[in-house]
Amino acid sequence: MFLLATAKPWIYWLAFLLMLGSALLVIALFVGYLIKVVAAKYPRQQ
Image (cartoon, rainbow, N blue to C red; front, side):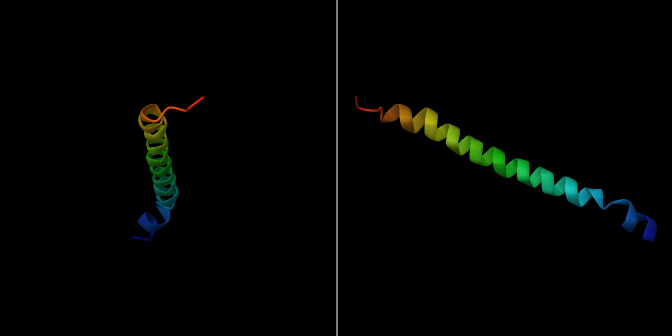
């Protein structure tokens, strides 16, 4: 049992990286939506 406990500490780092990547993906999708949809709906007045 101790072998299993000591053999998998890298999984926590992998989970952290996957969670960080997922959060960045959600932020990028939201910013892309704002740029493509909302900015096109309300163009700048020159």
